[in-house]
Length: 385
Image (cartoon, rainbow, N blue to C red; front, top):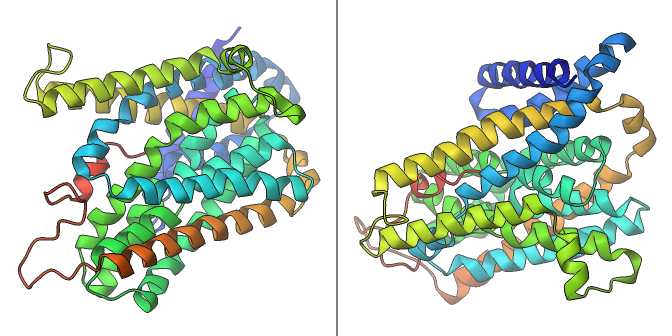
């Protein structure tokens, strides 16, 4: 019963991987949003008999497969790595994420959008783009159309930020302050791939490779906030209009897969901490085994296989009529939300630049992390969301 729909979703995800690999590299578009677009196009063009045949499998993929992928993504989140890279970006990221998840749902309500869509726009804009949307959606019972609209916002406004923000940074920051410039880019742009593309663009245009590493750390710090925001959004959804939350409603509101996601992140953090202290991860794995296995579980199985398949199924389930009914309001909220998150990121980075200007001597390495060591984009690349 489920096989035809799962096969259709997997085939769509595979096709999306190929299509994404053929797109110009400067666009920095991953396979996941492409899988939603291809799925929506194929699903709306398919005959009704085919749609009926694949519907049970699509339902399974958008629930079980997608949720399993979210649990696996937890293996990419490590609080220990944030502490190793440097704690100074944590309060800055907290300001950016906090502003987004607070203000964007309020804007969505003002524009008459469903609270679920407001939550998806908030998380996608504030934390880590499509991955945040896919993690939050099942926790708040979002519809496939709401997921697709939120993903479209992330791709559109994240791409705009990727093109515009390097020039904003060049105009407003001292050219020697790679730390503050990277912090701004890492806090202001939506998706991790877009952040890295934005930072690489700045580095190429203004000959400052250190910005890439600074942006990577800022973005990784934002990504870790996903572990707190997913249960928060689940509780908000369960509380509804009353806004009342008790220990009982909290336990009931947080789905089992969210607990699995948090547990996976906790295990990754524990293993990383043990390695940092000179031991073996979980008393059994050396550094290469642990990081290689965790990265395969989170980045390959979780993101490239399960999330791509689940979100391709979301696309296959979307009816284009839902977009016509949504109008321009979601995109107005998405644009305003992107401006809020970008503006807060800019303000925080400018504040840091004024309080602690970083002007290393010629030939001196840049330790902008606050950890006492240099950090590169590779440190955050392993955790890419």
